[in-house]
Length: 150
Image (cartoon, rainbow, N blue to C red; front, side, top):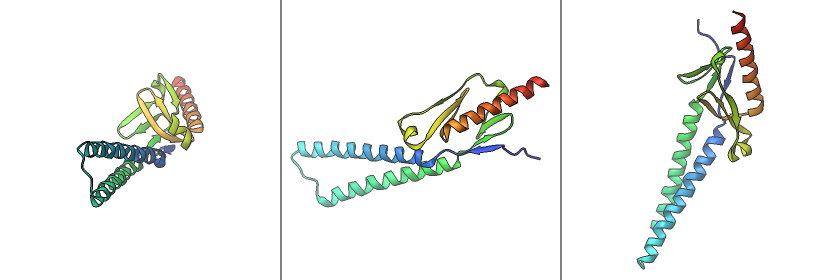
């Protein structure tokens, strides 16, 4: 019989998708500005239909990038068991944890998420970061006491 996880932690997809979308749009705008400067320096003009096509392609690429990010994020899950955390094929046993830390960046502060790092495993865009971090620390302490009693 397969062991069931105590808890499943899924990253916040909006926290992943929105910065990705904004980055793609920003890079597209910079790319267009570079093209516009080159065209201006060559004393040429870009026809309106070409401007529209460039804009449409940039928006389409940003939407595709966002969809790909969303699909990838929706497949990600951090499974918390009594004695370990598993992310895909990677896992960390609680009794072998050397370091555990939490961190937040600007976007994490906006979305109420954060990153939990346990040894080499990074759990990104975790919602309710403080509660989740404390929960994992409690499970680690419980697991260590169980391991030491054996």
